[in-house]
Every structure is written in C-alpha cells, then in structure tokens.
Length: 231
Length: 310
Image 1 (spheres, one colour):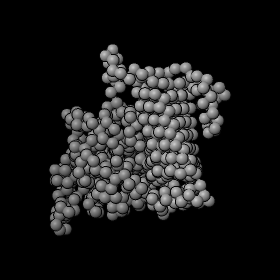
Image 2 (cartoon, helix red, strand yellow; image 1 turned 180 degrees about the vertical axis):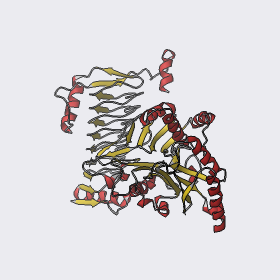
Image 3 (cartoon, chains in turn blue, cyan; image 1 turned 135 degrees about the horizontal axis):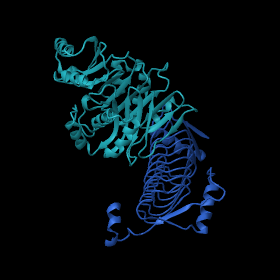
Image 4 (cartoon, chains in turn purple, green; image 1 turned 90 degrees about the vertical axis):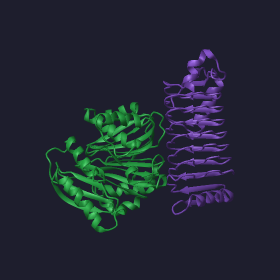
C-alpha cells in the first residue's frame, strides 16, 4: 500500500503520488499533509485517499468517484465542485465547504465555517456540529443536514433542495421557511447519521426542515421589501 | 490577500524568544504576500522608559555623512523635548531609547515627539514603553537584519503584505501604530470601505495619520475608544458596528492582544490556545510547528471578538 510523506515534496508531486497509489493499490495514505493547499484536487478514479492530518485550502476539489478521509481539519473550500464520491473530515472545516457541489457526499464531524454549501447544486452535506454565517446560500438542489446551530442568514435565497437543522435556527435567510419533515426525510437523515457515525445525536432527534418559500422566484411588487433586502 | 498572526505568552515569557515564534509564523504566511513583512514586539522596559523606532530610508542617502546628519537632526529635535539614553542604527531603522519620563501615557508629549521627528522628513514607526515596530520590504527573512529572532518578549503581532490598495512601501506596510498612543498596534487583513469618513472624523478631533491606508484608521479608532474608557473587548465590539468592509484584524496593547472579525466572516483566522500561550494566524499551517495534543484549535465565527490580557 502506498504511503506518501509530504515533507520535501511539492503539491504537484504529492498529487501525482496519490494518483499512482490509487492506480496501483486503490489506496493512498498521505502522511504530514501539514495544512498545505490544493491536495487531492481533481481526482477522478475509484479508491480511497486518507490524509493523516489537517489539509489546507481546496482539498478534494472537483472530486469524482474517489473517497477521501481527512484525519484533521480542512481549510477553505474543501470538496468544492465535487461531482461524486465522498469526503469525510474528522475535524472542522473552514469557509465554503462543499461550495457549488454537484454530487457526492461531504461529511464534517466538527464545525464548519461561513458559507458552507454555498450554491449547492446536488449531493449531500452533513455537518456534525455548527455552521457559521450564510451557510446554504442560494442552494439549488441537494440535501444539507446540520446537527448543531446555524449562524446568521442560514439558507438565504435558496431555489430548491432541503436543509435540516437540529440546533438553533434563530436567524434564517430571506425566503427560507420551516416546514414539516416527512417520514422519508426522517429515514434519510437516520440512515446518514448512522452510516457516518455522527456523534452527540439524541435518541429521537427533532430536525427542523427548511425549504424555499419561492417568493423570490418571480418579482412581485407587493414583495418589494423582501427584494430590497435580498438584492 | 495578506497574512496576519499574533502570539501571546500567558506567563509573560518563555525560553523560546517571542521573535522566533513570530518569525516562524511570518515565514509560512509569506505565501499570502511577500511585498512587506512587519512585527510589533512587546518586551520589557522599566516604567517610564520609551523606545522610538524611526524609519530612515537608507537608499535616500549617498554616503554615511548624510545618514549621520539625519540622525543628528533627529537627535537635536528630540533633545528639545526629552532626554536620550541610547541610539542604535540598524538596516533602515533607528532605535532611540529615551531616559525616564514622568508619564508613559502623556499623549500630548507623544504627539509633540511624533511631529518633531516627522517634520524632519522621516517616519516614526512606533513609540512604546514595551512595544517596538520593525518592518521592511520583502519576506520575513529581511527582518533578520534587525535580529528579531532573538527578541525576548511577552506578546506581539506580525503581518505579511500583498499590496492591493497602496504601493509597495515600508510606510504602508503593517503593523500600523496607533499614533500618537504608545504601545498600540494593529495588523489587518481585508479592506475597509468607510475609512476616509472615519479618518476625517478622527482628524477633526485632532488625530494625525501618516498614511491614507485603511488599516491605520483601525489602530487609531481603537486607541480612541480605549482613551474614552472602554475596555479592549468593548472597543473591538464597537469596531464591528462602526467599521464597514471586510476585516479580520489583530490588535495589541501593553497588556495583551485581541482580534475582531467582520459580520460576513470574510477573512480567515485560526486560534491555537493552550495553558502557556495563544497563537493566531490566517492559516492553520502557520501554527503547526507549535501545536500539540493539549492545544485547543478553533476558527472564530462572524462578529467574534476575543482578548487575552495580563
């Protein structure tokens, strides 16, 4: 099995070694990632990559097929533009985690920073703890589950998709409305939480479901006040 | 982009010099900007003693005699106001240690010292009982000339600059001193949009600025709040309401350090804290060399402020 020590290697060399490991063994273990940027970007082959420590910005960007596990924290934009596969962060993630993702699954066991899942287009995001300011902004499709509290302006100006929050939703964004969860929703969440072993969830969790109010779909003079804030 | 970092020894000092801590962070953060590097270092001087750091642009002078002339000009101007204990000249920076004065915080005297020096055509980087600001063009290694890695101290700030709003010039690089308040400095990552308005309102109240830079306004704004009797934490909270634009900034006083983040959480900051120190930096990579299992590592949220004081 390939084990790659990042010390002394350039990012290009590390990423090439990761691909070679996947080709040969279907697995790459990356030691000493030391929060460096652009690790595991653009991977497009099945297999498993494990980072034994924190990664910097853009880890797992544009990911296809591959399963990435990060035994540490992730910097800005982890798993952004992901197409398929999974990214599991065992620590915290910073701003714009899962930005514009089109498929696949992003799991963050800790907290996630501002603008988590911004412009999410499909796929699943599960955050084990809290998310910061303006997470879920302009979501177009997909699923986001937050097991902690949400920051200000959560789920602002979303089009479609579903967001579930276990903690507080004191400051929802424009046109975000709370609605009732269906039995299917509950099963989906249960499956996700048990599959990825999310900790600290009560026996019968009561997730709030947030969807688009669709008031911003078409301009309506009577909603002018809402538009002024939204734009 | 810019990189900012701060360090605070909870028990005052340690066998690892403060300067080495800040240099290691500034070197790593060089990837966020190499146009200039600066530090605000807090050491220990007896009460009443002040250190001035004055920028003499060495390439302005053709020969040693001209430098000597500039130094003697500064000396004679200073001696009309205060007594000088010691003068050293390294790199581009003159370090002047004053003899004991009655009040460290005599703002009027500080303002007089500042204009006396700056009227001679040089820039005063800092006045401090404990603080010294050192900055130069280029990456962290350029500060080696000033022997910063040996600097023993309790806390400090550092900044690596990517010039976006004003030219590559030492005078526009961070940390910015809150002139004329001794011992207050700021490093800032971001852009303010209402800095001209704020500067004008502070100028109307008598404050002077050495640049048109947005970050210098933050330093003076906070110093003014402190003068009005607010605590450092209250001043930081106040700044989140009054400053418009994007910012994560770190502030330091003789008592300690703190940070404030804008309402959009635009700019990054990671904090590492354990029982002996607090270290903060734009990126986690700058903290790696100093964190261990007992270190609490976290990213503050939008609108967060926090201070560590002695």
